[in-house]
Each structure stands twice: as C-alpha cells, then as structure tokens.
Image (cartoon, rainbow, N blue to C red):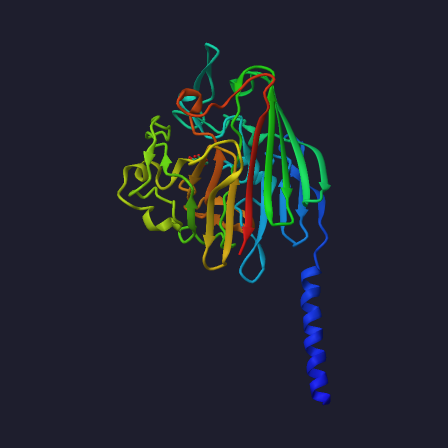
Amino acid sequence: MKKVFVVILSVLLLYSAGSCKSNNKAESKIEKSVFGKLADGSQVDAYVLKNTNGMTAKIITYGAVVVSLTAPDKSGKYEDVVLGYDNIEGYAADRAYFGAIVGRYGNRIARGKMTIDGKEYQLAINNPPNSLHGGVVGFNKKIWTVDGANVTKNGPAITMTLVSNDGEENYPGTVKLKVVYTLTNNDELSIVYTGATDKTTVLNPTNHSYFNLSGDMNNTILDHEVMIAADKTTPVDRGLIPLGNFADVAGTPMDFRTAKKIGRDINADYEQLKIAGGYDHNWAMNTYDKKVRLIATVYEPNSGRFMKVLSDQPGVQFYTGNFLDGRVKGKNGVMYKKRSGLCLEAQHYPDSPNKPQFPTTLLKPGEIYHQTTIYKFSH
Ligand code: GLA
C-alpha cells in the first residue's frame, strides 16, 4: 500500500514538474551594452533581445546587424545559428555583409547605372562591373538610431531608423527608413521595414544574415535541406545581372520546389551554377500580392533545426556563401570557409531599375515603402 502511495505521489510530482516546466517561461527582456567604438570614435551599442523561451537576438546599431541569433535544436537547446564577428573591428572591415540591413538597393544594379524621370545616375561600381548592396558606404556601414527598445505583447522589439541623404552614394532623394526587429515569443525574428523619400528614387533593402543551423560554423551548409516556393528564377550573366528572362526550375539543379540537400546538385555541370560558383540567384516567387506568405524553408537534419522564411517580397536571393574563402575570422575565432553559411535575402529582383518587366522598386514622394520578412524557428 505504502509503495503504491509513493508511486502515485512520484507520478503526481513528475506531472506537476512537467506542467511547471511548460509554464516556466523565462522573462522577456532587452539588455543594452556598448559593443565598441569605430576608428573615428563613434560608439556602437548592442541590444540583446530575449523572448520568453530564452531565445536571443543580438543587434547592433552599426548596420542594424544581427550579430547573433539562437534557435532550438531537437532537444530544445538554443545555439547561435548566424555568422558574424566578435567585435566592431570585424564589422567595420566586413565585405560579406554578415547580418546587416543592406540598401539603399540590395543586390546589383548593372554597371551602376539607372535612369529615373529621364535623368541618368551613375552609382559606385563596388562589385565590378556593377554596383552592389547600396555602394561603398551602404546602409550596412552606417550607425542607425534606436527609436525604441521595448518588451511588447509579441516579444522584445527594437526600432531602428536611418536617414540616407539626397545624393548619398549618388542616389536621388532623402530616404528615411525604419526597421523594427521583433523577437516574438513564437521563436520568430520578424523584420518590418517602412520607408519614405522626398524625391523619386529606388529602395530595396534586405537583411543579409548568413545561417548555419547546425550551430557549429566549422560545418558547411551542404547538408541543409532547402525548399524555395518558386517555379522560376531570373538567369544571370557573368556579372550576376539578370538577363531579363524567367527560366523554369523544373528538371534543373535550381529546382527547390521540394526540399532537397543543397549539396545534391550544387556542383552539377550547369552553366548558371558555374557562373556563380554555387547558388547566388534570384528566385521569382510564385505569388506576389504584397501579402506575407511562405517563401522558403531550411532544415538541418543533425540538430533537427527548422527555419521558415515568410515574406511579402516578390523574390529571394539564395546565396550559398560562395565568396567565403577561409580568410575571414568570425565569432569564436572560426575561419569561415566556402559554404559555411547560406542567405535567403527576401527582396525585389536584382537590377530591377533597368528591367521594366520586373516589379518596380521605384519609390515616389508620398508613397510608403513596406516590407515584412519573418525567420521562424522550430525543431
Ligand atoms: C549577395 C550577393 C552575392 C554576394 C553577397 C555578399 O548575396 O548576391 O553575390 O555579393 O551578397 O558577398
């Protein structure tokens, strides 16, 4: 009898411990600290957002960079899943755009030329022969202003703003861009952009995080299984500028409509892959009605980590870290080698300013630019 009682008591205790665990949520909070100082003495701050599950996102005022982002593995262990640097010196010297908000125009503009209202603009050629990610001093190299850092009902959120002056990097119009990062209590990093201009210009920002869901950046991403909800890509020339046509992915290594390992076809004898040294292309999403929908998923089988990418953007640049070459020292002293991270940059198609057949990236005075992109983690 006594034994039965002990067993019942233990079961009750175990049960209450279990239910306690599910209610035992961490406190959602934001912690601010000094990340470092740039060579000119200006201070860069860091904000660590923590949700009720214990997931964290560290964001700095330089480039609005996501320095670290933790996500749960199959046993519920949260580990960092993005590439980055340990200090501000790393970001100041960065050429890979780790974690940054890039702009004014994310991705490439052919020969840095565009014509707006009959006037031709020559932008910086910082990725010969083209302009890339906003030019020499893009949004990734600027100090952003923090307009608010609060724990909201959805989770901790930080609002960052940037003013890009008329003529900066030769783009017309003063652009004001606001980015709200929210680390929701559903383990999502939500990024909401709003922007406005005082002269007609182009605006196409994106977040340039490199993910490696294994949590160990010494691994490549070749085993990651990726799905992209697109029947077509925009094939490119040798400078990675879209030719202007759309190509069916069916029957080619570009077909990610059903999840497959990145490594399965990446080395295929296929011209588009040879040109880019791997995947570095724009997928044109099947639907584009400005509503947020699922555009891609990533699964890493060893850790069991799963990431969904949701966005209202017309395209996604899927990039497999082809330019990483083992010479960049990242967080914890890891030398990032080729294919140690993957990017899924929700955005408009590259070179849209010169491709009238692509959805427009023009922003006129009085209009509001809007983008929502969400990286959602589970296991
Ligand atoms: C984007 C581009 C790539 C490369 C990276 C940064 O993903 O499409 O070609 O420039 O940014 O290295």
